[in-house]
Length: 458
Image (cartoon, rainbow, N blue to C red; front, top):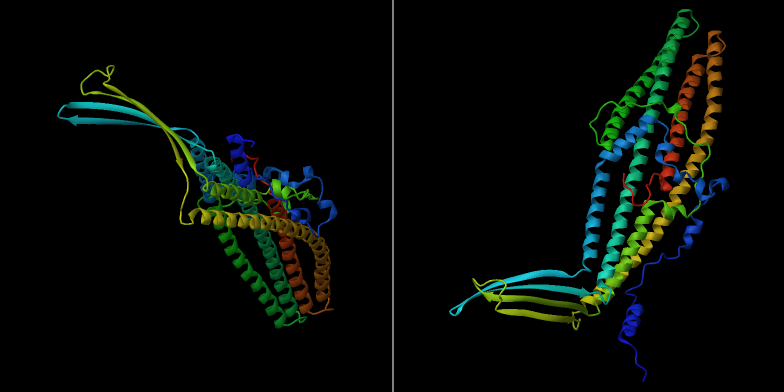
């Protein structure tokens, strides 16, 4: 009968049970169909994607860039995430050192009627990783560390997007406040005009009262906006980790962004998005956890030994009374563990399937976010074109109705209606401008923009 060397049998056993196999990314056909309902020019070469733009280049407003830097330094959630990375690094270091032998020393004092003696016995123990327990523990710790790093990047990109969104919300509220105050001044002028026409007998008290009511509605709206601005400034300060105070900012109309946005190929969602990386490293960790669970069915092998000496108390150390030495090969094999190993393996297998489903769903969610953000950007741009044409028509309508009223060819209701409609259109244009900027921010975040290269920190 042909005999196989022991090492060959060992390799067959370990390869058959998968203990020493490395994690491989599973095939995900869903990746190829992540983007739907998009303009063809948006899906292009990787190198043109806005995901590769540093946030300092995407956001041209110098004040906003300063606020983002402050937030990256002070934000509580991000600093906690960084500490989680340090914890994972310590865990990984411990798993790496588990491959090294442990060294200890025993010292004893023996007292008897015949005399006293003193002994010292250093010892060494080394666990041989014959069945992958230490290796899979280390691999799992490496995956856990990468999860922590990916989570930190996810918090970082979310923080950048949230700071930018909050900043532009303030700019939108400022612009709407400016529009409302300008409109209120127009109403006050209308009230004076209508009062003069009333004295001339060309209109009545109802017209003056209606105009005054419209002015009061705008004034009430301004008060609500002032409260919104105050609350938004306070929330913005908390986001930055600073005490509430004045938030210096630019103007909404002065903000500029790329005219055309390219998202690149679906592979970006695997390479750039930190939540996708986090989900995949969780899958890798569960893979090694299953390997580790399998390794518990195999024996543990430990080499140990000690060497030392004993001598009479008070004698010279260089003149020991005797030497102590021993060596030990310990083999610990599971015989009956009341089903603990089987349960551990079933749990690990189930968790790996959970991680697989979570990874797949994360990819689908990523594609959905990209789709929604790009469609929102395209829609906001189309709406802004409509808004511009609408406002031009309404401005002409206001001018004409005012002129007609002064010549007695129309009544005050048409004037009031035209001015009220113009106010709503101008406020809508401000909201649509903000929606355009917000969709750029969301698209940048959805593509994993703002992430740092692996291995770097803030």
